Image (cartoon, rainbow, N blue to C red; front, side):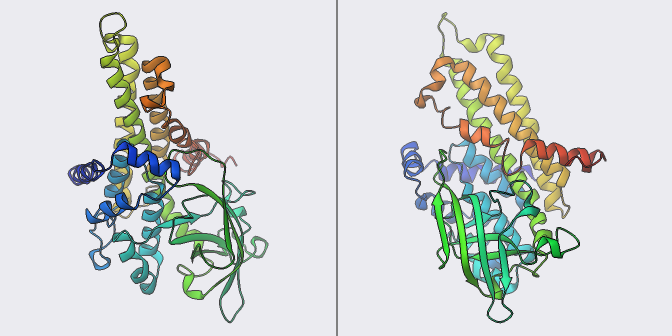
Length: 383
């Protein structure tokens, strides 16, 4: 594990973020406006080119370095969902895109000029991605016609490209449910694409959307890799997504813990800091231990993935541990603050939706446990 390189990324990220105060971030979250100045500052510091080859304007590295980036942004109170989705879409193109697609999109990612959204979730499919109904029908001449409905799509209104998962062959016509899928590069402003913001309150500059595709015309160059093999490609980037989610949760948990420790040092209703009481110390110390363990597992998973292995078990364990550690750190911080935790100025209320979401997305902890039971322990499939 390249801890030294990850630490360098974290320090660089912190230096960039220090130039953007709480008012800047709060305003962009309230207005749901892309923080363009911050994004460009990250690009100038070569942080958006992490994981991309120098041939495309990147600086190399891998998901280990990207995890250090997203952990630092979350720990600093500036979590950006677009960082995660743009990274995994860049990884997708790097692994499975053609030369034209790489040349078109990867330099833009590194330069901060191209942001991605990712559209897989549907109202009637949820976790069962094999049950999606969005279709991309090939007319045999001009290209594809995309039709369907996606939901909970973060930042699609701010994205330059959205990767859409769709069926090219009905499920009833394939022998294996993984067959007949495609990953498509779609302009979210193209004719036939419409979107409506969902009523979800989240302290982030990105909103979540329902997105509809009504006979959206696409040429064959929008298909990533071979038509029909989209799910094979998708599964190669689900593990880095879970690792980056774990890194984000560790960062959020560390921020909550820092707020709790600060309060424990300052609050002294009986003349001495409450942090001198074991009833306060122990939950905070336990949270610290859990966060450190989750971070080590996240780094281990990243190292496995960067070494060319799938890291499926490691990514799922990291995601589970990080979500639980973040929850416990938040709870310890709230208990340390007492009633003051519910004052927005304490900084904890803004973290709660982010902490709780970590146990649900991008895959629920229950589905993670199902995966581990089957693939790590060899138990029968339970769903």
